[in-house]
Image (cartoon, rainbow, N blue to C red; front, side):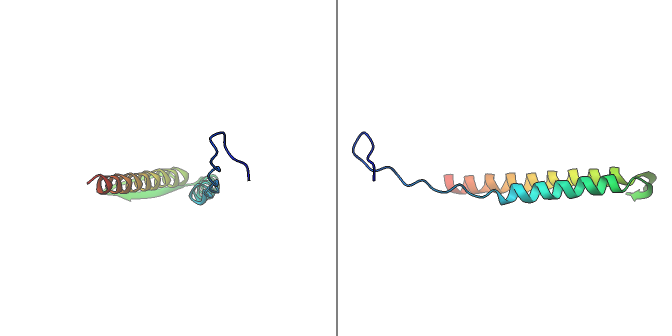
Length: 88
């Protein structure tokens, strides 16, 4: 074992954590893009009394954005709550 300049043994390095969440998010993004390019026809949409016909890929894209925004907000609120509990 080698010693540092001050005579102490170096701390063992911890293995890097596998970014499984990033890999899952990337796979879901790829599935979303494939689904968007596979659905290019118009479809009727009814929402809160409004009715229109728009491209299905646009509905899928907007749904993906809303889902990502909700996930981001939930993660942010959990981190903030955890940090506040630690500071109390």
